Length: 460
Image (tube, rainbow, N blue to C red; front, side):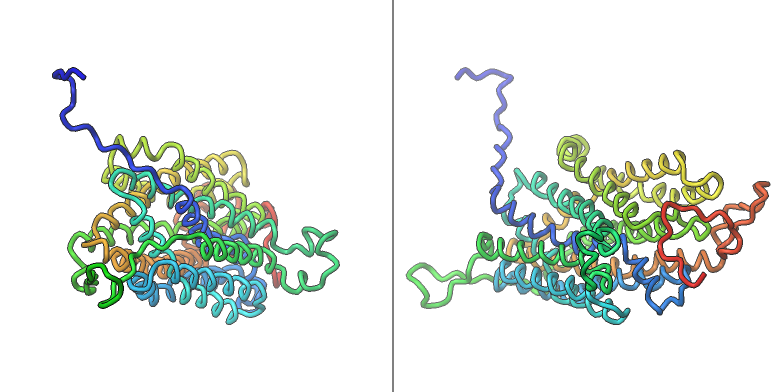
């Protein structure tokens, strides 16, 4: 070979091939996480509205539904650091299997719960027994290197988007099978007594298949500790850093950015199903559970397609920092579109303008979702050592769980408070538009209640 001035002295490193089968298993396990969290969204507000705890008052649903959505993250915050640190010592695989078993049991329990207290216990059980989020990120960091980490980490939001697509569709499609599929389920009284059990059972079955696949095929990524006198090779001592040593300035910065992104994201996700379900005069769009599931699924579907096809070239072009900053900026117009959609629906009903606004919100969400891949890369690169990767991800997931516990309850409660205090109508100045129509939070203020489905109008 003849060298010339155009010959690079240092060629860029050749990307290491990803271990496809192990990666597939890991992503299959990860999919259980968004499925279990997202499947309840299409029917949770209707389920809470049917319980005696609300007294048939739609305006109170946001408080109780938001609490259920938050409880998983509240309990997870107490245990996720323990599970992640434990995985540094006993291995990733045992912790993952325990988490999958906990998700399976909690979904079965949730499906057959007939009281608000039972719903609370089932969500707490899921959070206490499940520390898989941090462990999966640790394993992803261990099976990738600097040449393919962006490619590997980009797959995690795709899996979440897939779960965010399938979960709501399953929750909306299979809820109340006694009435929706009378030829198949109408002959069994069980499905009438437990109208939301079927989607929960479907997700529980998936968690069991993920458990079996990981048990049989997943390879452990943590090197076993060499004991004195064990074997003929040299003794290797692995020193695990203390929590104080792991909390370096780089780790604190990365975790703080990740937590802020997660707080805004979970607040938005909690508002979406509540906003879609509530009737138009109560600040929403009046969609039925199947329509809610399709809308939520569309957000996840388009985000996943974008991540799978365009994230890598966009990442290579703009880098981690620019993408993350852009992701954070998109939240402002996304939140602003909620009242704008309700305003257009109040004036002209749910029409093309409303769906155009919904589409714009979806496009912004797709752009925002790229921030999570960047956050994962930041946290992974901030770990002080490879033996503290589990603890670093555990710290990050603990902080994220705390803000995710606060986010749903805060956002949905503020939404309900705005309805009870009539802040929504007053802020728009709707009564001054000269439309000759009086809007308010009371059902008596609005006579044409024609949403796309009527989710549980009790006590009227």
